[in-house]
Image (cartoon, rainbow, N blue to C red; front, side, top):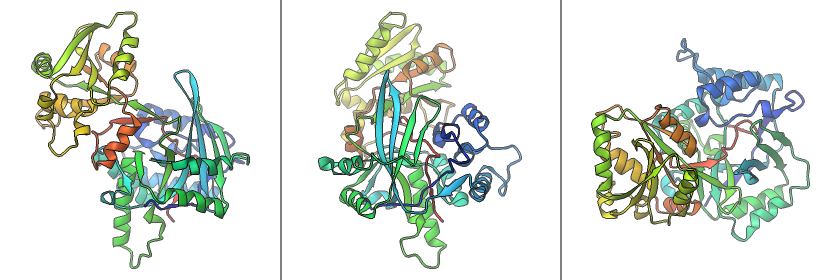
Amino acid sequence: MAEVHPFRGVRYNQELVKDLADVICPPYDIISPQLQQELYRRSEYNFVRLEHNRELPQDTTTDNKYTRSAAILERWLEQGVLVVDEVPAIYLHDHYFNYRGKECRRRGIIACVRLVEWDEMVIRPHEGTLVEHTDDRLSLLWVCQANTSSILALFEDQGQRVSSLLAAQEPGQPVISSGDGRGERHNVWAVTEPEVIDQICGSLAHQPLYVADGHHRYESALTYQREKRTCSSSVSGDEAFNFVMMELVDFSDPGLIILPAHRLVRGMSRATLNELTAKLGSFLEIEELSLNKPDVWQQIDHLLAAGETNEVRLVLLGLAEGRLLLLRLRDFTAADQMMPYFHSELYKRLDVDIVDDVILGKLAGLGSGGGELTLSYSYDGEDAVNKVLEQEYQLAFLLSPIKVEVVKAIADAGDRMSKKATYFYPKVPAGLVFHRLV
């Protein structure tokens, strides 16, 4: 099913760029304006200039953040800041990071994967997308002709065949070994032996791949492929635009961590806020918990982590001053009637979809076009709570983390969760190695 290929990666020239921690950056979608400024200051060669360049007030259709990224890419290649590997490779990436006081390792394979349309079910999504993000990545693709950051995708390593092949590559010297300045570090090996590459690609060829992070990048790559085919006089199918760079991780990898994307809301009218508690009580059990209790966070963690797959549990702050509301779904039928009919039963029992479709969509009117309700996201529960206590937002919905088997089940059903339903932690950095389409 999935067709995986080696490629000639583009990497920093470590004779000129000594400390890669100064130049790699997160992918575009988590680079805030403040972080963008910090990355610019960190190094004149920081990869943010390619991945997520600054917008300027005087930007035009011919001089803008995308064209500047393309110009910088060409300049860095000419100056030798970036170099292209001579031999096609599959890159083994060990990503070390700290989570809850322990060091973890997530192992991935960076390779090129043939693009196929979603409906072929070879590459399977699990959550919805935002048009503006897809358009942004498509604009960058057209001018830079490069996949600047990897899509994170998951596979099933049956019999640990791929794991065994990769383990044999470890004794060699990594081509990249670096920290990234945030308590993370990276080792990257270039696997170039044709026989090993064929074995790895063959092990992945008979199964689908599941997009964990990078749905917008995949959709933009599909659109780019269609547009390139339209404007090309002849297409063999092996052109670089028929492929996209991915980092592939085994579903059972112990370093595969999914954080919940807690919802933050502002712009809700006083009347809607006053009515919301009664509306929630019509189909949810509500229990109050003092925010000042010494063990409040242990209780929250236990509540959100202990729920069974078919039980909806979430925590709401902002309706009762100084108190958290612990919400449990009591009447599934009532909630079901307020959700889009075409979704799967599994979708309808996920707390993130109950919040987005029922509470915010139906009860609060988000997306109805009649209000100014703003939805934002936080991947840290205490941060979300503090934003409400500091009155930056009115409400915070704290959600349970999505289990990786649920991600697979949703994708296998051909369904998609709400936008920003999952956060695979940490993000694959941009700038370690990337793929040019020329």
